[in-house]
Length: 332
Ligand code: UT7
Image (cartoon, rainbow, N blue to C red; front, side, top):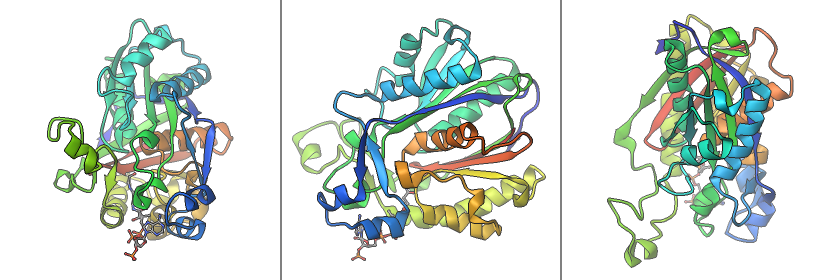
């Protein structure tokens, strides 16, 4: 757990982008052996958005970034660093962040992708916050962007009903800039569970071959129920402990921005904390699981809709492939 000292860090502005094509549960009923009822009851998801042909992760990242920069009142030339959390980069290299830097004309900024499952964007926010608080960086653009639809097996009902494409972005700066001040964060991983969510094909362990293609290794594979159990076991005590270390009770957090993977997971954590449902910011019904974009999209919707008032605390928490997880606390 890290409490921020030094210059502190804050979220100055947020943005998001979704692609144009909506895919409903009814559409999926026509593609795989599933039902709207199963998907809604087991996940809470009703629709998700899928990138049209030719739309890249960098395109969504750019749209979300431009909105976040506008809302923050920061020019691209004033960025010191661009970090993009993504598990579906256009290419393994170059990084999405590097292409984004070029498109934005962020001439003074370094750029790197943070690939750490759905937790990537939360890790990136924590790294940005640490760097800003130390004085090493002044303005950092953090993005979560995914076009996972190109890496999904659309005949596998275990995964294709869950994921959606999208991007969220925040511009971060020193605490003196106002906005949502980062009070602290905690980052964790349990790498012994690395086999729960995987994309194996076409890289070092399994170079692309006819065999990897035949085995469907160029698709996301997930042991969904094992992930579900892992998260339900690990996340509630982790968040409890984090808040305790921050000297706060769960009641003092006004808005819970959880990773938008499954309503049952969010509901379970809230129940465990003894909190009402309306404390959670939920948009997974519309967007599905947008992986590393999810918490940034949810934060953007909460802030831009006026739901978050001055003084409110927002707890962001995510988990994903690795298994990685973490939490980050903001006060507006
Ligand atoms: O962001 C990455 C992190 N990932 C996650 O957070 C995912 C976490 N896991 C989950 O959200 C849930 O485990 C799922 C929604 C993926 C699955 O729900 P579940 O309650 O764990 O179901 P299950 O995997 O235990 O499967 C129950 C049944 C199985 O049938 P049998 O074996 O009982 O006959 C599955 O084959 O549901 C079946 N099933 C489906 N049925 C209709 C699995 N997917 C579907 C489907 N439609 N799409």
